[in-house]
Image (cartoon, rainbow, N blue to C red; front, side):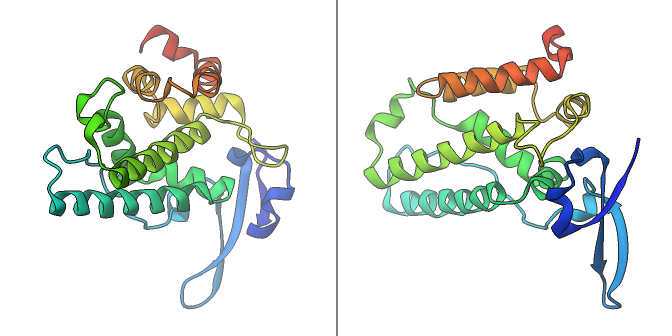
Length: 207
């Protein structure tokens, strides 16, 4: 496999898959240069994503306020994640366990469409939940995309290994995604799942 060494600012122009890129960075108090694979745990930011908690059922002011603050905190973190360049996004996705715990908790605990508790949410809670719902979907959509542009892409076979070996997707998660996001997002969801199965045939066997 040919490795390409480049400065961070030049990476997007290299038209080399992320999995073959190396990047030279200045680090440490001495300002020394070091070369790492572009996809490397030391390039992950220490963000500390928090798990999702669903809207309160009793609607007490204190619990509503707590939910709103918590939802805003997660939404801001996910917006930060989505704004990252391609290489940094994937470093965070692959190596940040707190991010995966956050996403997994949303899939498990987010209100389903038939959840009766959703019908009586206050406007503020409904808006916070709606905003967070969209942010989570956009993260999963980007995670299911191996090629964002001509400059930003991962070798398809390597992408399949990454999402499978790091448990970014599995059959239960895909089923949760269908339940949570199928309504109103059917075309995007179809493309997402189609790409996952196309790049990683192991999912078809349920393994």
